Length: 483
Image (cartoon, rainbow, N blue to C red; front, side, top):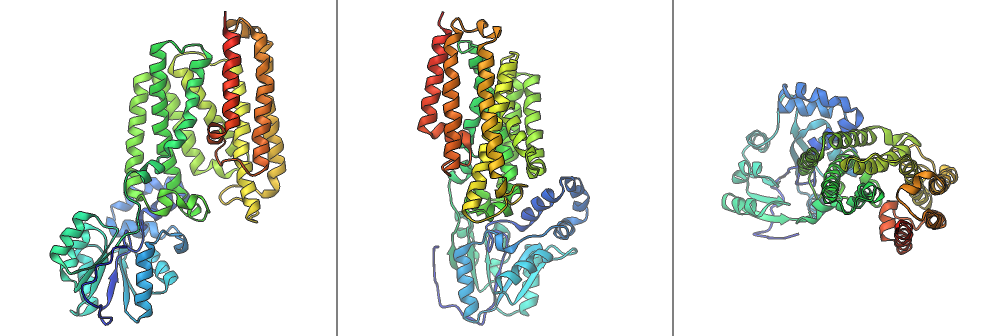
């Protein structure tokens, strides 16, 4: 917090406090909008009709249909601490915001530091000059102080006795100093590019390495055109996946904030605004489908299928027991299929079967690791998912069986006539079976000990034992391929 005192504060002068971006590191309209979408996605089609009622009516329509938990909102903590001290000293605080009164009153009741609330109604949008008039009428021409964060507040600052800025830009600070007596500046938001990189989850792009599987399996590593297509496909899939991660995070804001690890995600913590998230989501989608179109119509179709399945998963399917892990396994497999489509090769039955069993194994590892974490915190069920801690043993059995079945598929492939097409020495490939059995067993051992990363693919890339297994697989395949 930057503290710039000009003179001692007169406690008899009321302080009017803006909500969105000032008291909150978020915007209540967008918070409630995504709560509405999560409640029922088809509400999206009602939004244009509500907009015809004007901004005030639009906010009222949404506010009347959703519930916001004030405890889980991302407050600007240094500023909130300042307000509590002002309240304890007897100063009158009024919450003055353009957000709808239905939601604002719940926040005021929860914080219990505001003596009054000025907010938008279904007929009036309390912003800019409208808010200024409401404040002046409330004060009957007496002096007042105001805390804000946005350029729209420049319509209010010139009429204040003193002003306060929270998480504002350098340009707005300079403009405010010219028109008002700027008393304090509060900062409680991470700056720079890192929060945005975390928001798009660049580290999760490692999953999309699966797109290269078909390139390797079809022995096209030295086909320049195929390699270029797969590289384009990798970035296309990565951009699309990142946009879906953003959408999923915006839908899951309340549950993420109530999670010991996920509460630090950029949107949940308020380090990246929801508005920026929406903009970034559409930019990434445009890039994803633009790149996909340069490969082929078929690849474009696969990417569209991935997006639709991911949307369905985020909106609904992830709440159904076992359906969610089957969808996750399917999305991993779809990445492998996308790689095959990108280079126009037919994906073999063997690779498809192996992928489904192996990725179901990994999806179940993910769920089991989450349930183990819950059991350690004495929580009986996963929020937003139809799983109980008591399901752990059954899910482990399913996952281990699926992992071993993937190894069995490899054994059948090695013993089939198809193997002779690419491998002059197929018997060497038998070594893959004990290697895979070791790796699957290791993964489940780590999961049972509570040492598994929440994303098993990320664990596989970081884990030394898994990297050793990958090297061994490459060595075995190399010697089996030698003519």
